[in-house]
Amino acid sequence: MSTVRHRPEGLEQLEAQTRFSRKELQILYRGFKNECPSGVVNEETFKDIYAQFFPQGDASTYAHFLFNAFDTDHNGSVSFEDFVMGLSILLRGTVQEKLNWAFNLYDINKDGYITKEEMLDIMKAIYDMMGKCTYPVLKEETPRQHVEVFFQKMDKNKDGVVTIDEFIDCCQNDENIMRSMHLFENVL
Image (cartoon, rainbow, N blue to C red; front, side, top):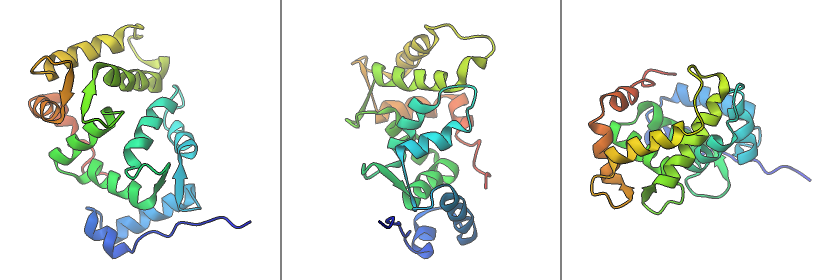
């Protein structure tokens, strides 16, 4: 039985849809094909690849959320196009695009709102991924405490959920978040 291989869209089209040059797209494609010879990556493979970057912790839950954010058509796989479109936003997107992408990551059930539970799930996944090697050592209740602080700031109308507008407004007025939005702009 032969393996079905995914052929990416033309480079010209991807160049027009992303903020990557033709040369950068070729480099990214070579790396993607090296890790995913079939041209698509399923969630398990994505988790395995992601885990290599965080050997001291358990990255599987965060990788699951990240995979879902990259899998924009929700078909259970990430194609090169999906990957490059997401990467283009994360590395070269406007602040607004990056914040929309981040909101989508936190909005786990895709209902247009972030609940405390969703934020806590993401926060716990981040702490699990960082492992027990943090200093100072984090207490069990630390993720919940962080979520409480974030929710106090973000949920402006105190209705128990954070909308995209509340999320963006809060992030744009937070110096640390805004600084982090520019960290990876010159990567690649």
